Image 1 (cartoon, rainbow, N blue to C red):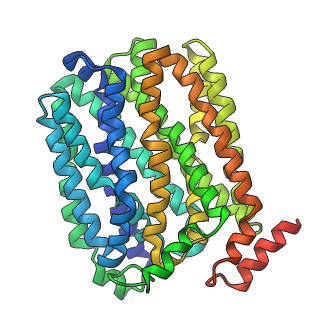
Image 2 (image 1 turned 90 degrees about the vertical axis):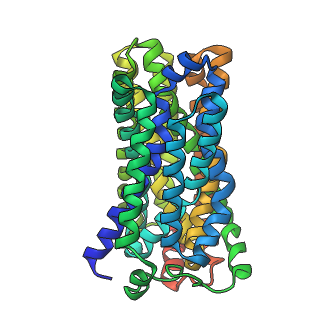
Length: 426
């Protein structure tokens, strides 16, 4: 494949991911307005955020499997149309119940996009860039959240919260139309994008699917990634409200400052992927070490930050912890790709997305909201960094069993096995 076309595919896929997360996270910018207008509890607000992640978790696996068989590109375009129309539905909601069902449909549309989109991107680039591209692509979620929260806060302050959803929905529909014209199954297949890029590629599903769970290492990658996502999404969802309640910032300024924290998260994702790829060239096990160190660092910095009262020192520590809290995304995705067959690449990423959703995206905002109702938001944010401890232990265990996990894949070549075994002896 030509380098130029590969980057066009990346840019358009990244753009749709921005739209995905803008539509998902714009809700957080208008939490204070919805709470005041509809007299909602923090648990109800958290459920409006969590239902999207829950549907992503429930549907990502079957929809990604369907995309591997039916065609990834047409699946991506259809998904973008669904979540964009559902976001427009949020704009005309007249009650909590209507908003809940509109958000439900946003989750249905977004369910498979992340896993299928990253599978398309990884299929058009060399394997040596997996962690970097995975981190950069997943960071699109953070950057989309920045745009969604920041732009959404400004629009809500000046035009009202309904316009925030309307703008996001229209943006998604435009991008979906462009993607459908520029990228196609035929073009990817003609350019040699690899197994699974075209409809029906990849062989027997019955023989390939068990390999998605065939080793301790891949299970640890799923678990560690999901638990770190719990922490990242809880912070992303509740930072605007925290800034509003404890720093006295209005909706637009709280959204802009929270957007900075989301941007820091995205920078951490890219940095984690770059460091992981660089260190992992000579010793693949160091990718696991990078993830474990990021978990430990996020635990210490965030727990310490939220022990402090509101002020500049707190924001500095929380910002540093935010930098590390999801820097594990790139290394974890690279490990999943290396430990699963290429023919079910979208389904492997769907399994990772499932873990991220069920362990992180869905419970993160909702559990934090329930804790906030009982003990206050500040106290709740002191507790949630503890999940990083379990995530770090999962990455450490995955590192220990990594060579055995590679050996369980028939497609792994002697060089990869030699590198893994050599790293065990270092």
